[in-house]
Amino acid sequence: MKKIFTFFIIFSFLTSCSNKSKFIGTWYNNSNFCDSLSISKGENNLVAEYFGFKFPAEVNDGYLEIFGEEITKVSLGKKDELLINGTVYSKKIIDENLLLDGDWKIHECTKKYEWSKISLTKDTIVISYGSPIEIIGTIKRLSIDTIAVNYEYVASTIHMSKLIDELEDKINYDKPIAYILPISKNHFSFKWLGITLKNEKEKYLDKLDDDLYWGEKANDFEYKLIFIKE
Image 1 (cartoon, rainbow, N blue to C red):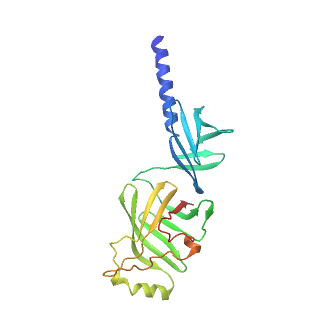
Image 2 (cartoon, rainbow, N blue to C red; image 1 turned 90 degrees about the vertical axis):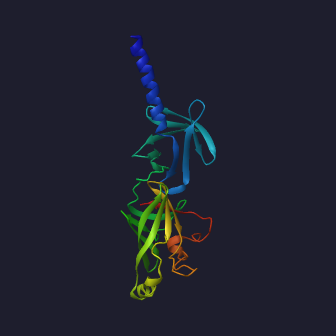
Image 3 (tube, one colour; image 1 turned 135 degrees about the horizontal axis):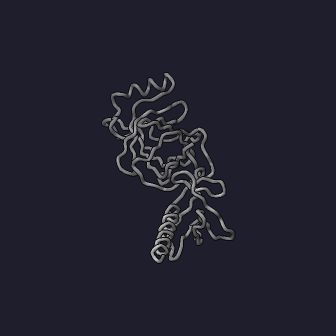
């Protein structure tokens, strides 16, 4: 009887630890990257940090309860997702097998740029650079948290395509035109470099000048472009 009682104590403890670990991490709102939640271990229980404020939290009946002015219940959703009052949050993860297939758009906190678009299908990427240019490229993972984008060709008007085709022999196809830095399965940051030309210092299409597609801050050196999956 004593052995059975001890077994249940150990089992309950392990289950409790397992349930807590599922909530630990940094989580980002799937429609507003500025809205994030960080959950970590405290001395006796869990601690939730939200907009710089820390609140005690604990797991009860499969829910995470955050004790602020009111008790907020957090539930587990799909893999690596949380649900808070109907809003989905994705966990910050570093995973070399993270799948990015789908359509993505730029978000500046609550503002979404509807004209922006990056589409990913396996190793192929289509970037809506600006009217009337779409850049088609390939992606290659350089490290667990960095993916290089290399230029293949452009889809545009006949006039614009002809101008770019004239540069074909000058384009350095080995130099990345951009980097994708995955954050979660639904968020990544994007760093645009431009198309490198052989034996030339200046790059082609190196500025993100179309505000409808990229926003007003896209060319600011310290600004981080955030794409969220549709």
